[in-house]
Length: 319
Picture 1 (cartoon, rainbow, N blue to C red):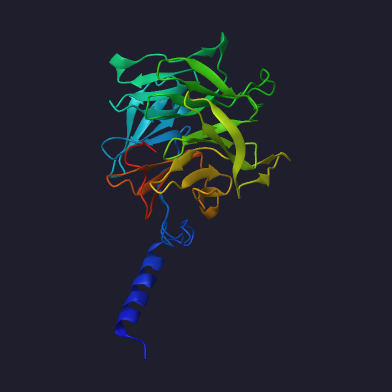
Picture 2: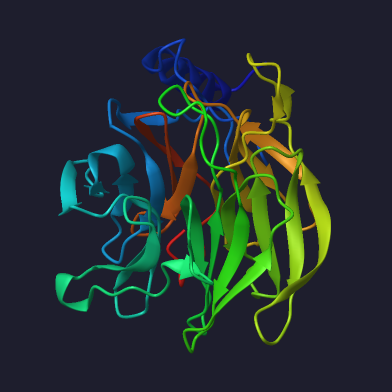
């Protein structure tokens, strides 16, 4: 005979299922990462560009509304407000230990501090006299060095014949020296460091894999390899293949969270795909935030979502 406890659990599950719409995206069960059936909650849709999320010091989330030239804040109460106007087209964001916000910027292309106003500066705006094309994402190492990507140019409806593309991965040393580290990635996008900062991960939007490199003492990279094959690899409407790989976040166990065509792909520290969290709109970037850093915020195609997880982000990092 089934116990009363069983019936109560079953009844609770039915109530939970009824509360969620049939169209709501829910998480699959991923051991240690996500409980099955948890709703990915839409906070707001209709933003004019969504990129560069980071967890801020007060538990809120900041992200860039790129085409509106703003940085937006989502509070722990889900209230949305403008954090910074006139961000110079800030895209990816990073934080210093002092709370300064460093951004790759796309209007006047450069990398530098955008907040607070009295600390605005430029760390790099060209490489050997050639301006950056599309600074995309960045990650700051604990020693102050900054790795960032430039995804180059690509045809669009507004500009079907752009200048030749020169994508690359760059490094600004703690002393301020700029180095170009890689030029052989078709479209470098998201970038992240392993928890021990010995490996650099790069998302190649046009490729099938997340790439990994070993980091040398001087910050340079070597030993390029395919770290993980993405489920998002598919043929688009234009006939070209792409994984859609974009932003990368890391949890406290060293697992990677990658925005791709498939949704949010979770990858073990050994490069195994552990599961995929689907979303109604293709994600572009993501970060852990909240007081306990157990909420994964995902932005993409004008929408912002939050997903409660079983695991936490790294306490000393903004994403």
